[in-house]
Image (cartoon, rainbow, N blue to C red):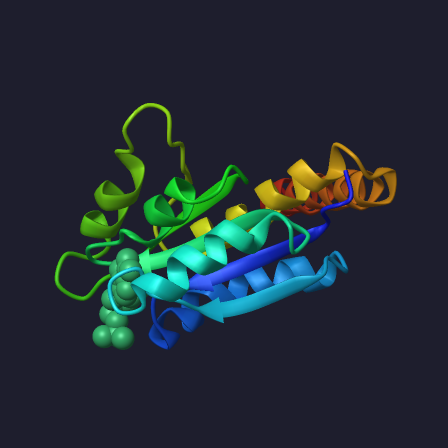
Length: 164
Ligand SMILES: Nc1c(C(=O)O)ncn1[C@@H]1O[C@H](COP(=O)(O)O)[C@@H](O)[C@H]1O
């Protein structure tokens, strides 16, 4: 697979507080990443152009974070065959439940892999994108295995401390 880049797309710059958690993990794994604010609602033509060109521009995965009436991930998925991971950003009015339901209930045939609401979801979107890249890249796979081992060690240590 020659496509190695990940796009982190968000509906508004106000989503960056959440989506920076995706970008930080991708940077830790040295994954080439582009960040974009592209709203399906406010920038429909740019959204369609970005999604249609993403594959030929070398992207392997698109992470899309949006809040409220979060149509961005679904509309990206409608315009590309790349895997799209949707992150429901926590909204003020409904605490992110609106974002979650807007992203998760896609019709069959146009999938969006939906994460949890908020920061944990943004982090897991990055780890899922890294898992996809690791299918074709042993260096990334090794880094991911090391990360999981360190995470297990840290959890085991905290368990031991509890019984000290
Ligand atoms: N859900 C969408 C889309 C979209 O899905 O196209 N575009 C913007 N938004 C969301 O509107 C919220 C408020 O945006 P502002 O803070 O700019 O008013 C953000 O969480 C954004 O993701």
